[in-house]
Image 1 (tube, rainbow, N blue to C red):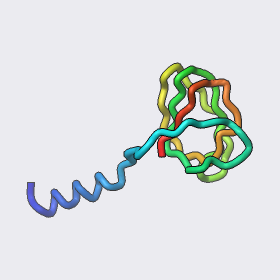
Image 2: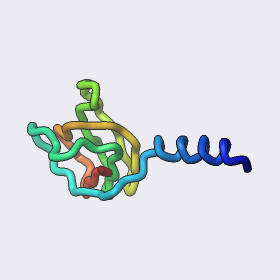
Image 3: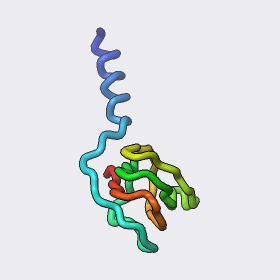
Length: 86
C-alpha cells in the first residue's frame, strides 16, 4: 500500500465512531449529561428518544440489542438495562 493510500485509509478510520465509554441511561425530561451515539437495551421493549436533530422517535429493542443513534434525551422506556455509548 502506498503512503498516500495509507493516509487516506487512516483518515477514513478517524470518522468511524468508537465509543470511549458506556453509561447507564435513565429516562426523564432532562437532557442527557452527554449526548449518546448508540443505545443498548439489555431487556427488550420500547425506548423514546430525542434525536440530535430534535425529532422524537420510538425505537423497539429486542433483548441485548444495540442500535446506533445520535440522541440528546431518553424520554420514556419500557426496555430495561439501558446503556448509552459516548
